[in-house]
Image (cartoon, rainbow over all chains, first blue to last red; front, side, top):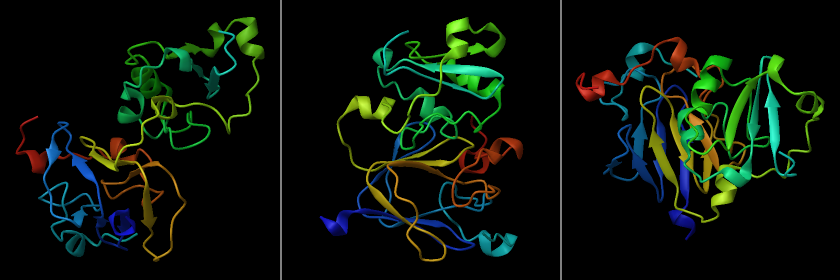
Length: 63
Length: 168
């Protein structure tokens, strides 16, 4: 069971990684089929939202 | 209004009343405004989380009037006297619904990532962050309370548009 536990990892200046068991729904309420782990954009600039596309490296996102 | 489970919360401008016996767990309040209505926190209503205008908008969407609001100048004498009760044991829309579900992650349109369930959060410094069963992560890049949402996405007009090809 322990390996299935949902884990959120915040990367400094980067995305949010989600691993374990979870279900993601988009703004329209529909389930988004994803690989696991998934990397979600935190910088606001991804062209592939809600997923990370590496834009944080170009826009100087830090946190 | 004399159910001991009832609560009222104010920001000095308006007062929000929470009447658990009327709640049907529609989840509108925390889906729309988790900065204010967060069932994973005690007290679960944080009146400082958004402007009165926004709080009123979301309270008005509650389908059952489990949440209602009044301008403070319209409070009755009795409501005015009501003291904050000990809130550590208050019920929330989520505790009322009972059933435990797998971790749910919702991407809010032009807003945060809302996580609900049993999970662990590891911060950017590799430290484990405060345990909770519900939280929201910033997606606009501008929160002053990283990694959490603080409502800044509204101020900067954060939009998901690029992900949806303008179809909104």
